[in-house]
Amino acid sequence: MLSFRELVALLRRSRRMSRHRRRQFVELLLSVVERPLVPDTRLDLDSMNDADAILHFRFDVASLTRLSRALQLPAVVITESRDRCLAVEALCVALNRLAYPRRYCDMMIMFGRSRESMCRIHNYVLDALYDTWADVLFFQQTLVAKRLQKYKDAIVAKGSPLTNVFGFIDGSKIETCRITQRRKHRDDGDVELIIYPDMQRVIYSGHKRRHCLNFQAVTAPDGLCIHFWGPLEGSRHDTTLLRESKLLEHLDAHEAVYAGSQIYGDPAYGLLKWVSSGYKCARISDREKAFNSSMSKVRQSVEWTFGITKTLWAFIKFKDQQKIMLSSVGKAVSVAVFLANCHCCIYRGNQISSFFNLAPPSLEEYLSLSVKNTGAIQRDLSH
Image (tube, rainbow, N blue to C red; front, side, top):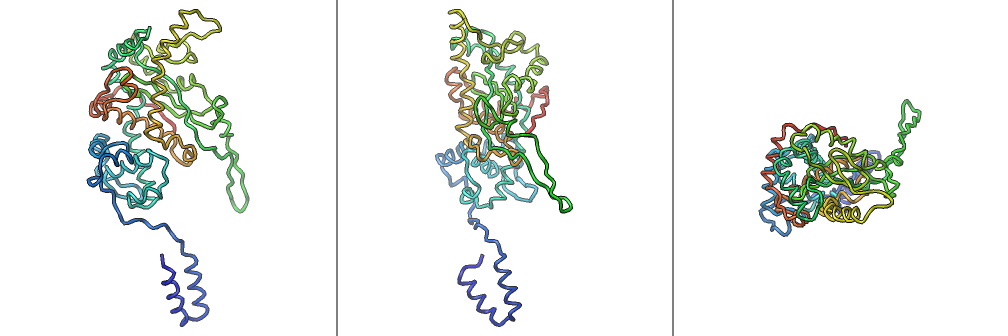
């Protein structure tokens, strides 16, 4: 972009031009779009200390390199628009974006790339991680089967009256921006009005009084989210999430492994083959009240899962950037939960694992076990 002095010098030189050429020259200058300057810098992790890395990316420098290799990202990431960067830099772009609701123009100072380039790299990483680890996020069959008895023992040790519970199920609502209801399209000069379904009503939760998307999670005592599914419209109930997720069908398919085991949820789920819940009626006995109280103390860990994820990756709880039909809202939330699991494995636990006194597996064990899960049922997660 020309400076003011350079522009004045060009106009003085243009005096020798004809009036018509001079007018064309001025119109050309006025039509030039001024663009933000891209800093001449590049991300250098070798010169960054661990404190700054954790602040910007939620992982220290050594863990970033370890994570980029374990997640099986290509050594050189190349987007469809031919943006090129190393795997660790691409991962840092995605982590920095998810760690806080930053704008891409704020990230230019650190990465020395244009806003458009960082947006494409961020979307590439989200797509790559989700496509590679979607089955892992749905249910970690091999890992859960191996640690099933440890899960039960840890829950019983915290005072659970049930001895067959290995996880806790609950739903969470991620607030989104209000969606536009209608659009206008021009065809042969006429205005064609296309009215979409009332999406604002569909994603609106009357209980929470907000526009949101529903997600379902099952939390284990070692701090890992062993099952995550979504999104579904915010107006749907948690029992609808359970039915649509096909989690019960997955447990049926592995009945030999989970025979006699259950997951525990709030009373809204009721009593099912694989799900147990507390007593729900107008009048319950003192014994039933004591049962509900004991199970409520251990069931709160599933609430901590969503809290930990939103604390680590604050981007997903900033509703103004969760724009349905303009960005992959559901995919970003799913990847955030997966990265929270990786964070738990790398740093050997979180609030949940400390509460149950059960350490999670290592990152390599967590991911390698998940890759070997060839019996996992493929799920169509619509984002």
